[in-house]
Image (tube, rainbow, N blue to C red; front, side):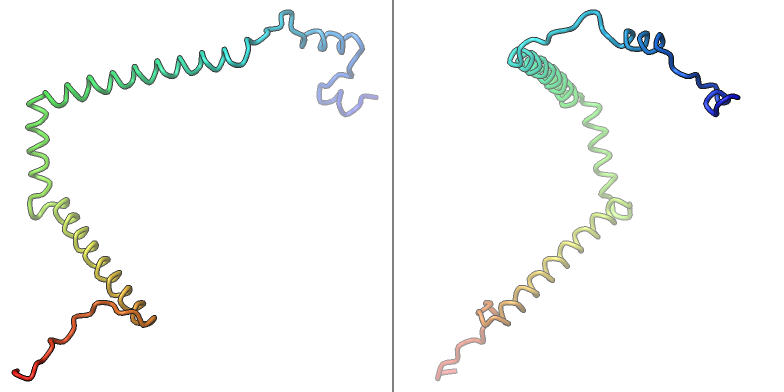
Length: 134
């Protein structure tokens, strides 16, 4: 009678198969890593070279961009078009300024309320001092 494993195509392990699998997993040559300091210094030197290379590329691209008159002209026209009244960018800019003003007002009012609660003077405008000659 066949077992469930045989029906599924599994075979019972044999001693020869076990030795073959064990031999297949061993490596012939074993790499011995260099000392830690040497590996770290090599990695740091490689990363430094990469960083210098990237910074040189960025520097060259910035120089090309700054000295490109056509690009400067296009950027100027784009900025002028963006802040033209009636554009979406102009609307967002106005909404942002209004939101910042509202936030500043709310923070100022809340600060004054907290200071009044604690009895600390909050530099409210004082009434003018009246003298006898007034």
